[in-house]
Length: 479
Image (tube, helix red, strand yellow):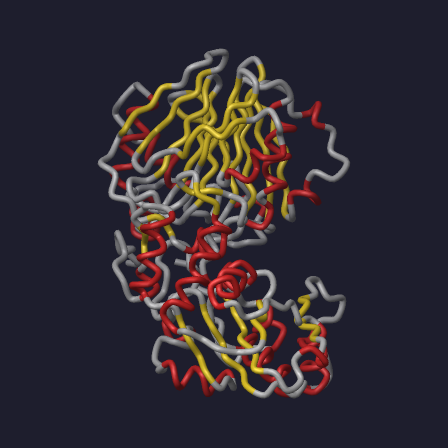
């Protein structure tokens, strides 16, 4: 397993940029268009709407007359396809992927998906969101057996497992592969005459379907469908379900290849997914607002203003404001992609100044006030420590920090590229110790029971809560 150890005493630039997406870096974006003219254009449009899920690389494969065409490169979707002529990706069927590196080097062109393989079933193209929990031992076994890999990404393992099946039927071979790798994945597989979409039996990673004209779109997030007024969200791909879309056929076939035991990654709802995407037909922004309401129900907070950490804490802050009647105020603005790089600054004072540029505060709004700051998580504490210091420097009378999820006390085995619990501020510290570290007068987290109550009332879904000290559906094999 590739490990990248990032210490709690990292540079300010690294700390400021360290968030949940780096803690759980497996949230790639998948997109497919089936039986739609200019399919590659629609795939591109959908990838663009999901670009927050990965900016390390992007690619699209299309199929026309059983011939494959592709374009992929390192970088963001917009950069990779800047001035690209989509006539080079013809056909009514296509799949695409934008990558946030999990297993394998993020700067390797060989790891950019989708990945093409020549098999006994003909050419197949695979796009994968997630991380295979037993990738390392499987890879080592195959290397000992003489298998030659074209990349260092774990996604390639699935193709080799398909090729090892004794069945002459591709769908059966895919099911054979799923018996060797149980989690975590959503997959799109392109063949000369069909697209196959599937999710693992735990449903860890999302995948949704919409109609568009006489064809279909398949995406990691339903928000991508909304750019087309004529599209209609159909449903989510179910946990343990395989869906086969055939070229030229209006109806699709479904196979429930495994008994579902849903453990959906709750951070899709808390943070990763666009707030306008849905799970079981429920918007994530509504879920986040309900988390804020539950915070007030549990803590009965008081203050003069509720201030979100933008944009991650916005909807929970709105819910908290609605429940409490305390005014909502966007006193902070966060500037992304600052031209200054704090890790190259010559002094600690200069590095702090640059870091503060990323969190602009109107001091007149908070002077002498009791402030409630709302965010979705505290991972390592540095950003929140800077926020509370800014508020104190501006004259805030009292600072309460509210977090709309429980403390993160354990690693995520489904994509985390380091395996050090000590890198989590709440792993070995009490809530009061964390409070002192961030410099707040008060620190309140949502309880695990509160989170479960909101999940049940909004989504009605089973979740993975291992990082909060709950149960993981399956533990990875690292050796």
